Length: 234
Ligand SMILES: N[C@@H](CCC(=O)N[C@@H](CS)C(=O)NCC(=O)O)C(=O)O
Image (cartoon, rainbow, N blue to C red; front, side, top):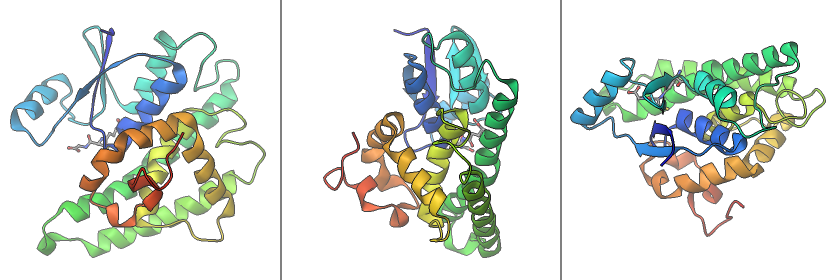
């Protein structure tokens, strides 16, 4: 048994951000599947973190919420020697990493979640204006990210896979099921493929396969992610 426990759900994009980080940092962690639809589980979870958002890391008896903070905590206290997701030796690059982590959470994850939330509403409570705004936001974020990727480097900030890429992978994975990347954003399209081929991302996606049938946006999910027979990630 590990000293760490992650309260998570296999379909949650934010949980995948942390699962990718755990793998890259080489940290062992017990997983506790959380069903927020169950009143008793929800009440117990709210007692740990009243905001009620997952994932939540428990380190010994201390609750660590918020994915970006969880990942910094993991790096600070548990990462294997030599592994990092936020550079320790260059404060300016570290700021860039935090900036692009924020862009992914605020301007890709948030509008993407808006689509999912709308699909979960009853038909007569749907919000077409909210969905149109979410699409507009996603498309303007795609343009911004494509521009960032025109610079040198394999990943979002330079040549190292960072916290920003941990955030980008699940955010873009789900976002493109609602708003595909327009053909003019070739840098973003190529980056998406690099992300999906990264071993930590590929294994996070593979773990989700049995759950994709419950994903409200599954109509937009590429077959290769839905059906392991089609193209198995490494
Ligand atoms: N800012 C939070 C966002 C976490 C978040 O939105 N989690 C979603 C799952 S992807 C959630 O808990 N949704 C359940 C709810 O809102 O009831 C973080 O970075 O941890």
